[in-house]
Structure formats: structure tokens, C-alpha cells
Image 1 (cartoon, rainbow, N blue to C red):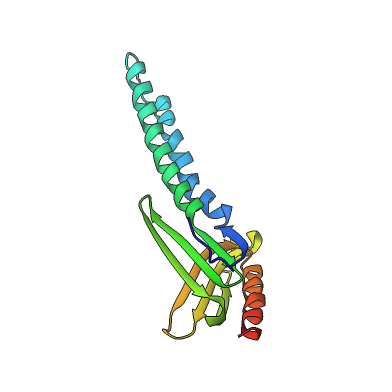
Image 2: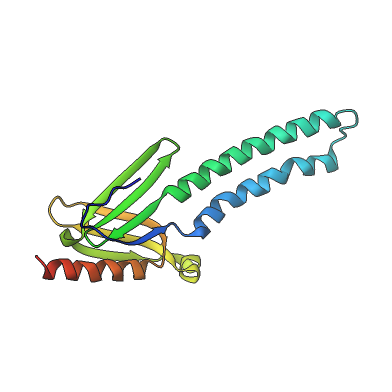
Length: 163
């Protein structure tokens, strides 16, 4: 996946908060049971086998969609090393964006926690501003963003002292 430099040590790997996946998957669970409610109002006498086949295809389609959602969730990650912050964002099954910033080049960090659910479940966005090219990294929906900021700040201070 990611190759670390020989003198680099991995400090932390974190993925998006589980609540984000739950919010994405929940509508699929509701939609999965929707055809069953048709049984209450529809008369499918003589079409039972067709209904079971159609419903099985429906569940297979939803299962594939859920798998793609889970894959996108699982492959989004932040890797913090003693030298770099690496952000991997899965954009689809076959598309991935990889951004990295040297810890010594970080100029500013900002944590944003929006809403009551994000506050209750302790997840939010971490924005890192780098020196130079006016680049900004926005890492969305990660757990405990304040702790991530503190870890990055700690290693940033160490990197600045050893310049």
C-alpha cells in the first residue's frame, strides 16, 4: 500500500469514523425491506417464485452497493509517521487520491466538529495548511480529530527542533 522511508516510523493509522459508514448503509437496510411491504398490499398468488427470484436479485444488488460503500470507507485512511502525514482517499473502486505533507512543512492545523452528532460521537474534520504552495489538506469525518491534531503538533515540534 504505502512504502515508508527507511528511517521513518509509523505512529498512527486511523480510518473514518464508523458512524459515517452507518449513515451511508442505513438507507440500504430500509430499502432492502421495502419489497417485503409489497406483500401486504399486493396479491402475488401464483407469482411466489418470481417474487423470491426478484427479491434475491434486489438483495444481491444492495449487497454489492454496500460492499462498494464499505470499501470506500475502509480504504480512506490517515497515516501519521514521524516525518509525514499521508492521507488516502478512496474515490471509487478503482480510483484513489493520495496526499502527503512533510510534518516539518506544516504551518497551521484546524479542527472542525459540526453538529450534535459529531460532538456526541467525537468525529470531525482536520485541515492542515502546508508551507509553500498554499496547499490545504482537508481530512473529513475522522474520529477524535483533536487527538490527531495533538499528535501531529507533537511530531511537528520535534521535526522543527531537529532541523
